[in-house]
Image (cartoon, rainbow, N blue to C red; front, side, top):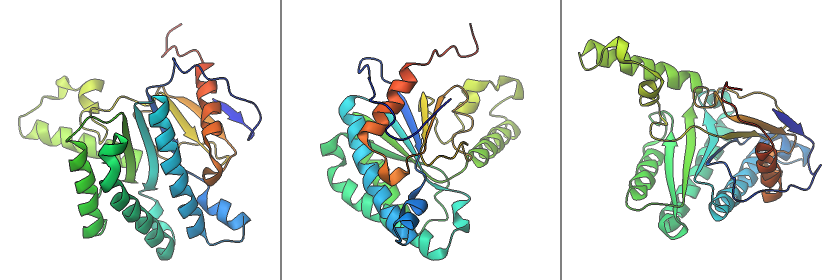
Amino acid sequence: MVFLKSRQTQAQVDWKRLPRHVAIIMDGNGRWAKRRGLPRTAGHAAGAEVFRNIATYCKDIGIEYLTVYAFSTENWKRPEAEVSAIMGLLEQYLLESIEKMERDQITLHFLGDLSPLSPKLRELCDRTQNISTHYEGKLHVNVCLNYGGRDEILRAARAFAADCAAGKKKPEELDEAAFSGYLYSAGVPDPDLVIRPSGELRLSNFLLWQSAYAELYYTDVLWPDFSKEELDRALAAYQSRSRRFGGV
């Protein structure tokens, strides 16, 4: 685990040894806005633009999977106006994406329980996911929406238990690979690198099962200030690690 002050070093990235899957907790939008005397919604708008830029950059440099934490199961506790603004930004992004996903060679999927979303937003999520099945993108983007790691594990456990009760599975058949197939992320490789901007040093219920052996990178840069250069620093830090997965 590494914690770096912003712009501390110039990253030296080996473009031939990039992680296959990068996951990012997009944190710090509200604090970014507060420091500038702006409403928190302005921070979320700035953060949405950074997400667009970072996703494009990941595609351009050859990263295969990008997973971002957009809205957690706990975020419903925020003020109604802020939640509405976040959902409005997501709707705007999806409307724009529908027109250019195939052109930009990006596929888009959602991880989480979408049932509490508005019918219009759910329909847009379904449309973008359906479009993604019609071509093979260079970058697969997973948006964690109304997502919580513990909730995901509980849902997977209940689903497996239901299959056992129905006679479709036997308890002794359960192993890590089988259990992973019940998660929202079924079919997606586990993240190699998890990045958290904003200076907070925790996972906040993000990809708890999948991140068991991910490399963690923390920086005090707030998400709306996160740049290609900051991502390069995270990639360089990742490449400096020795990943032993419990071995020697």
